[in-house]
Length: 250
Length: 312
Ligand SMILES: Nc1ncnc2c1ncn2[C@@H]1O[C@H](COP(=O)(O)OP(=O)(O)O)[C@@H](O)[C@H]1O
Ligand SMILES: [Mg+2]
Image: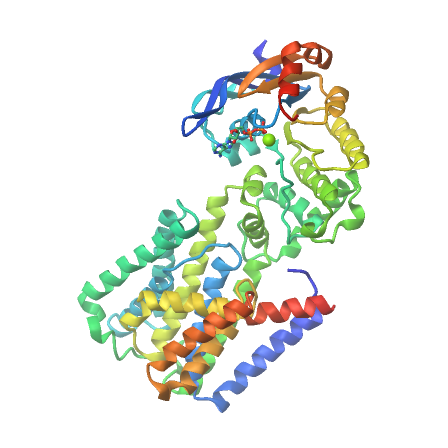
């Protein structure tokens, strides 16, 4: 049974100086699913991501990846295991071009990243793959533009391309469509659907139509605790969920 | 940093740098020119860390100074040749850089800077205490010797061109480091550290390598200084030297290739021409620095680059 759980938390708690941001959350993410994490602002969704990727230490509880305890592992190592996150605010390397951004993700497995005596030209063997990844998110024409100069929606697309360059096993997406126009939202949703094949996706998303469209399972968090869990139909029918959403700006 | 520089521009840049360096000893005193080169190398080493890894060290004099003393000791007391003496100095600076880096990188920002300063003070104390350093008098009479056993560096032109060759080689290595696979990762870490971690990079190890490289290059500047000036003094390990090099780097433009050298040239020239004013030099240098930083945040070279890229 547990082997089809790719990511699991057991009674995970996170306190910030006594303030409980996440209170005993047990989350089970099935391999190959698109799992939605929703809830009002301040519910603890981003904190959960930070705990799962080890960007923050847990106060109590256990985190398992493929059934192995990763609760104390360094964050870069968790990433190398294939659990890769995006950030709520778009995270690109601003002065690097779009192509170079993707190449940063591709170059680590090359094993030359400590070579300070090698020319950066030596990385051009990765250019074809980087361009293909950029083309996947419609960025092929902007390959040589510094990432900092891209419009917001394009930055998010670049972030996704960079994440996908790692061929992650589990993709954690924190509000991938936040701040996007209608058209970009549709495009990103399509993209997520496409890349989710053969992977597991855990995503925080405020746009409920995107959630309804993409997610197999949804966990609703409110004030650090799980309020409800199930399919979109199930959780949206739950009266406590309705109340939590009406009670605060979703 | 956009790739606005074509291959031709880079070639022209290097060509004028070489020409300038070759002409220098015929225009100014070779000793003055050597002093500028040594400091320019020191500032460029700091810039590798400050401008490209985003780490502010307030203890870089420890690397410059310790390498100067050790090189002096090796050349004078142990009778090592020039190159081996310098290599010994650089090795000590690199080892010291490893220790500093391991300790200071546990913290970031201002705490990082304070730890480097504190450790540098420990090195200063050790230098004062150890008998072979000559204490207040410094280590005097370091022999220049013969390069590879035949080129007599006692001649100040020979010494100058040797200094210049080492400077160019080190300068090239810094450029290469910035523009290497390692340099790419360093830039990524400076721009967005959490993102670099999320891509699987152990960022501390990259920062540590940057720190050790920077320390080794600062050490090379110190070794060169010991041979060229034939002495090592407490001023080389003092915190004022660490502060001064940060100031000169900011003045010229951190994170730019030529900025640190330009900053050094400006400050050293100013001090030279204003020397007759005595202690007022410090006041004037300080005032110039404040005005420059307030008016031109990016430093001299940084502002020029910004201007050029806006035009193009
Ligand atoms: N580093 C932190 N220090 C202190 N409090 C934090 C920190 N990160 C998050 N919080 C608090 O934890 C709660 C949950 O935040 P977050 O996980 O960002 O919510 P969500 O992503 O669901 O909107 C909020 O009340 C927030 O203020
Ligand atoms: Mg959030």
